[in-house]
Image (tube, rainbow, N blue to C red; front, side):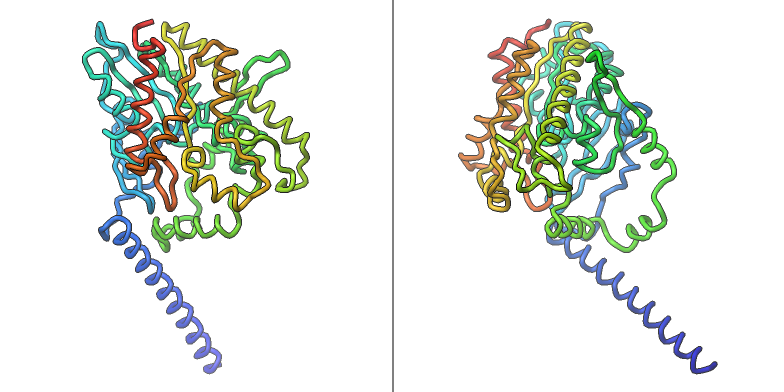
Length: 410
């Protein structure tokens, strides 16, 4: 009995020692990453719950008056949210007389993931146009789909009397995340409201998946998740996720889904997964694009009914702008026929059909990347635009808004 007890104690001691060693090693690695990438030992990254609040129709929204820290290997920056849950300064419900109010609706690329408040597209567009006659409001929220952007705009955004609404369409994910069948192929986790068309072609917003996600959120993280967060620091978690994606492909295992029709000349059936057929891909993307078009049309109609003009542009991704990024994907998947110009071309075709002006971004962003004066996109573990990218995009927006005659009141 004594020998068995002694053996148990040794095993227990060994396990405790191993756990302590792993804990110390992981946190030494965490501090090392902080020093290497951010130049300090402290980390100011906050939990999502510190700056997001559950929302009954959109899933989540910015916590009003929040100050939160965005931190990845590629950056460490602070974002300030005003009392209305919008990144940027406070503003009156109604614009001042003689001031044209511009409202930008988009996701993380325009919200400004990784850049300071004064460096976002909206802030830099405001600086270019000046404050005397123009006011730019950034209604963008990270990870929002076109469905969520539509709801945000009609539920609250239009009540603030914009003269011009600009939709920043993200071709890299907006079709997939708005249409539930594609979402289930794209990211698995369904956590948003989704859109579909009924038999008469009318737009319908479905909330079943959203309600389940809100219930999961209400219950909070599991004990396993809490233990993982205690044991593993945020930057080490990012390294682990990057390594996992490199080994498994993550969500990017099937280019017919994560790139898809919007970015490809043809489906690459040699990379199809889970026995999916060409007919399935064609059906999914055809319906997904129809839903996307219906959402954009409804945004236009609601904006015009509220007295605002409506225009849009296609956010230019790193894959579209940087030849090196495109070359890496093509090397990994040589059978994929990527067409970086297709998203803007298809959005322009939709714009012509719906009578919506489309601002061209791609050629000018590609030219800025080729010029090579500044890095327009982050690297390592994030591919959003840097402050220089936002500056380039804001300059293009300002120039084309003027040339299209969209800077006067409706």
